Image 1: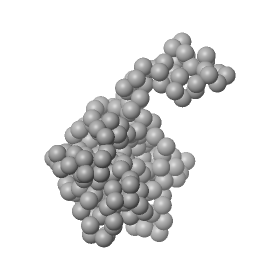
Image 2: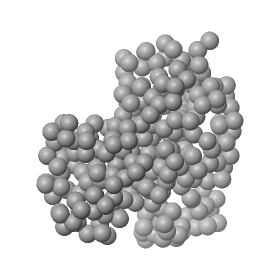
Image 3: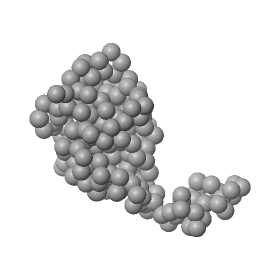
Image 4: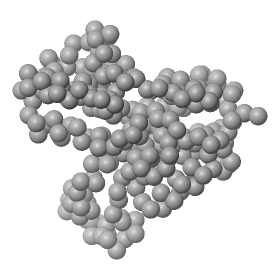
Length: 253
């Protein structure tokens, strides 16, 4: 009997699930060895009987936590899919401010702002959490969005009962392999020295600095990064601002 696989989404853009769909012909290899029983982005059928659950999105409200716990209870294995599920995502930045400050920043003085008050249950105070802050996670597929080829590799390992290992070296290694010009030399900011590799340095490849969507290394060499920042006259304030973009305070993968 094929393993039954289900995909679920929480607070996210659902771009990581679209990357799975973007496997195109390769997705035929996946569905030949698994039975996809729930995948809202690609099918209308749904079943609560599954062996492996892929979770996209950060966990925001108490009702989301309860839903996630139910999914965890049904699944033999649970995989966090993308930056939002792995480390809280860019929305995790909102945890630093009050609901009123966040709503003011988003809505300003636009008409309708008064309907986003605390008396509206749809605007209860959100606290964005990574999936592993609520339930046990068996494997992680980081990135914003995920790399579809890495998804295929990690999903295969999980289905074979193996524990997939993520790269534990910085994006700079992949940059050097690709013979990229360091984006600091181009006047860009980059978190490549402290960010987990595995994306083939796709952003620096196109002359854009790494924003750290794959999370920190297990042992990030922050002192070395500081030396690079000093060399290129980047302020501490700018460094910390970029560090927080993908809510690097999340740990555990």
